[in-house]
Length: 218
Image (cartoon, rainbow, N blue to C red; front, side):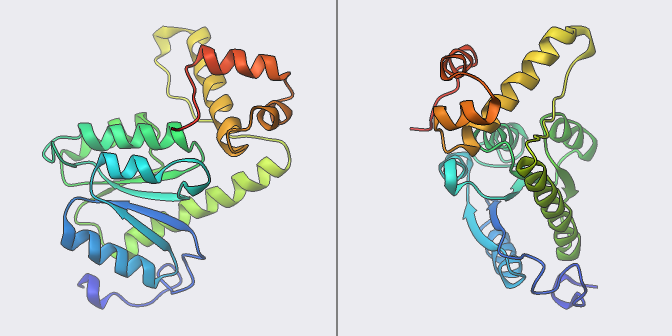
């Protein structure tokens, strides 16, 4: 069955997007336009980027998307994964709550390993069918909703990929940095509000911001 003739189901009904902000990072103009049109028709508020620089400009502060659909093969190295993986890491550093779903037409095993290792929410192999993309977006939206409920209850979910030989101190530092980044971003880069959320004095927040080199986006 072709993408164009896929049946309307609960997973790809017009209401499934529920107004979620979705950034599509794809360098193929035809595919980018098709995905934007198809997912926009399903209720997503779609924006698009062609490369790493455009994507970075769209993932910051209050304007950060809820979801990112990311092709790993981006210019200037479309046959490699380096640019896409850099976008993935930058997205999660600037907007830790964002769910990134990776698309790739490259070595499936290697791409999946690196994408998951660096914090991707999900992984799809190109050419991915619209129903499969919608299902992944729906799962990601469910996580976003539940994490928002956790935040209201004073909880935060962090995800850390650690090399076992590095030891617990390094793992703890990675979790500490991610928690700080999340609080700083979600407070709108307001140190006083981040301190309140974390239960710390403002001086301590400044200390950790300097420790991890975290800055408000310019």
